[in-house]
Amino acid sequence: AVIIVEEAAEVLETQLLACIGPWVQRLVMIGDHKQLRPQVTCYELVKRCHFDVSMFERLINNGIEHGVLNTQNRMRPEFVEMLRQIYPTLRSNHARVDANQAPQCISKSMFFWTHSDPETPGQSLSNNGECHRVVSLALFFVQQGYSPSKVTVLAAYRGQTKLIREALKKHLHTVWEPTPAESGSRVVQINGREHSEKDLLKMKRSELRLLMQACGLFVENLQSVEEMTEALLKSQEESAKTNEIVVHTIDQYQGDENDIIIVSLVRSNKFGDIGFLKTVNRYCVAVSRARCGVYFVGNSDTLQQKSQHWR
Image (cartoon, rainbow, N blue to C red; front, side):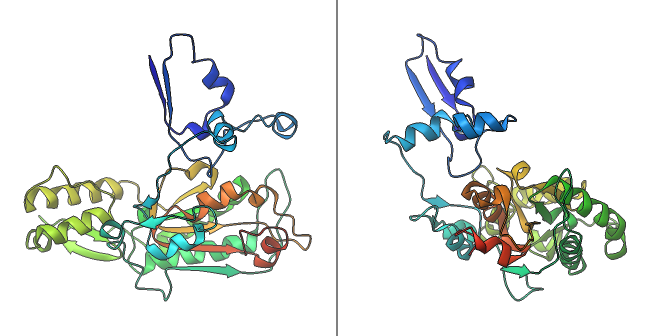
């Protein structure tokens, strides 16, 4: 028998061992041990027994032969430099990612917005001043023509996601209202630009292919302009069903992606205490989710005191 394990770096070793009996002839593990580890609720098991280290990561750390993918198909090429310390040989598939147009409403495709507003302790940390900045930035993109579904906010702590969700719920309707489609008209919004059904049908297949790649759609089985146009329109209609800016913790968003990602880092204190943000795994997830624009909001002085990768 053959066992194939997807996202093997997120599977507890004890869980995987329970599946491996004498009948197993081959074990294939696929994953990325540089991103998040398995979730373990008992801190003592993590601290004393390294219970959060998967079999996948342990075997690689002990020198087992393994293969590494070195081409990324998601983000704009300049974002790759933020991951160079983790993936030294990583390169971009330009035929795919060059279609990811940077936001035209802002001067940079990525930046770090630093501040000194203090964090608020509690069952889960939050930061009111940072929340205001994050929400203002998210609403700005919507004001400039981006659909709310194309903007995602990630926060390091659950307490901060609660604050941001409440603020967005209160203010989103003031800057955005779904535009009823004209009779018989269908529109696709990609990278902040609108394309009508008529516009799409006039495009070449090569142009439509780039638009589909920008939306994360596969084009191999679609041959005609009409088929590609219909796939784009249906994708847009599905996205429009969730007319909101999605807010998640960094941990919840591993494996997902969006055009615009705004990251709220929360920690802001004079001691340089950044908790689990010091782990390179969470840094890796936070910086690698965006296709077109990624924007960090946090206290750079706090983050840089004891962490090399946030410098």
